[in-house]
Length: 240
Image (cartoon, rainbow, N blue to C red):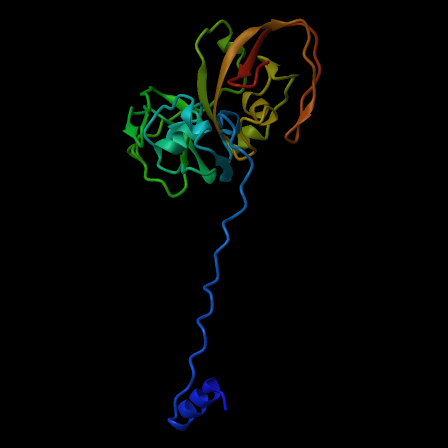
């Protein structure tokens, strides 16, 4: 009998049980890496759904950020994620929650990132799982948008206003990206992708009249063609 066999018999005789080798612990797989984050999310303003994308430490080294969380929606997304403490050596997924605009954004330093202060702005975002550095009750209250921008013709300042769901689903629109100033502001905002049919805050500027306006279908809204008109408007971030 071999020594191994003798040892096994001796163990059995003593009533002992041979220990099974420990099984390896299952390794939890990391979620797949999402598409790279856009530089800014201003064009996604008004979205009710969260949005997941990926940031690398290299991309997070560049750009300007306003606020301490939430951040203005024209801030550099990955730079803001670094400020929020979400960036590691390897690319990581971050989940963005869209939020209303604020009356003000506070400058802040965190995780090697210095952000800047700003006044009122029409849209914000924050990261899921990150602490907010701004008071939650400082949300900018926008007045309801007028039906059209015709009575505002000649104004040089951007106009910020709020669209109800009812206003977002009513009215006619002429043009694409640049709209006649008698178009429905809120319906045009849906066409431009600034808000959804649920409504939301918009910011637009008054523009000169155009020789013609090309209609199109976008985001479930049909806009119409038109010829020369003496006043126009366009939403922030959508005009070519």
